[in-house]
Length: 164
Image (tube, rainbow, N blue to C red; front, side, top):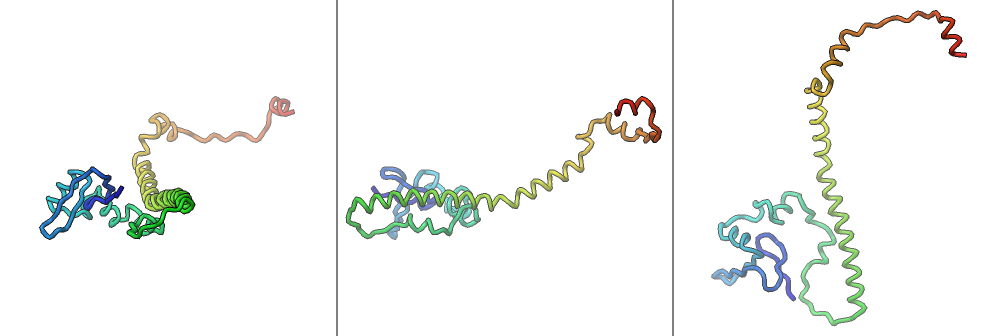
């Protein structure tokens, strides 16, 4: 079973799916769905269309350079089947998937980190500008009318009895 990549969006195309376009110079373009084929016919650049993997890679949205991607490369060299090698390969694939998912999560967190500070600063600024909406109207009037009263330092007999 041969899986190929869509020329436009870089998603995988399974056997029996997609559209194949052959140009006059015998160059083959494979598309996963009609959306990709129509965008190709409209001569759109995949690096400028936001939903493609090429756009995401060009604008730093996805990881592009990582050692785990080397395992996904296509190899045309035939290998003799060996049960032990196949078992080891399947175990390695699981480990690599786990490593890749953690690295992708770290990449996303690193990308979103500067925005958290901007959101926090804008929230603080908005609270400062509209503080009157947060404080009850009655409490603002009471603050201005409050008067400090000095309490005498003399203790009464009753308060001394209560303390004992």
